[in-house]
Length: 321
Image 1 (cartoon, one colour):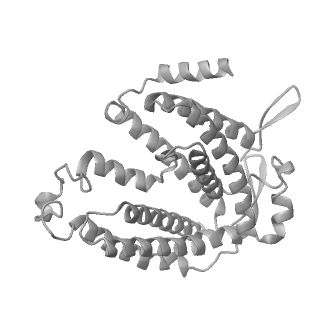
Image 2: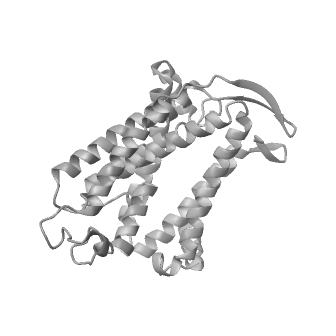
Image 3: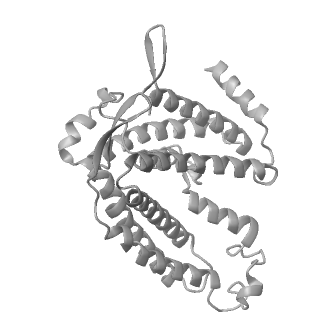
């Protein structure tokens, strides 16, 4: 909203760069603290983190080519212009994918056999895993499922079909059907100039963004949910296969994103300033909700969490550097 936050001795401090660097510092603080809590060896943390950082930058830039066409390749793939504000850093989604792939490759290169990038877990998948592990226990063979009184005969003890898996199949079919709502929606070509405070703004919903929200996201959701159904069909007599769980959660995430953005764009089609306002506010609400949830349930989710130890770890690492 305000490109220049403030000036120091005539040097402009831009909002995007300031908050980007602030986010990197916060992520570094969390990484150091989480590494201590989980006892991750630095021989693994350092190369995987560096690889994820580089992969994220490359993935974000490559995604611009994917969404805007090959004619942009000579400009966006010129990494000497990585910090050129006229080009932009790229897509967040591309950055996440690039970071995950690079982190995975680095973990295998150093001989790490286990999961290397669980911190990249999508929110829905992390939520399902948390509910399963701490409340429902539907996939743990040695734990009594909390839904047993509702389901009756359980796949853990008898050769029957799991109720959780059958509900997941129904949900997958329902979300596939609902994905056609954004997929068949028309594009909006509204554009106008306005003034917010003392700043002039030009508001428009770029067609490339609408392609991602109303075409690409629903199609990916349909594909992933279809794969989830296929895996569940091939693994009929277990609770919910981890691969089916991952496909379902990823598909639900793409569906939710596309549906929300298309709905927001249609509701505020003639008032794009409010569409932008609610887009940014909901992102902030999501971040605050995650922080608040972790804080409320910190004694069980993060039993060893101590803010002082996180800060001490961060300061010690900076001194060593």
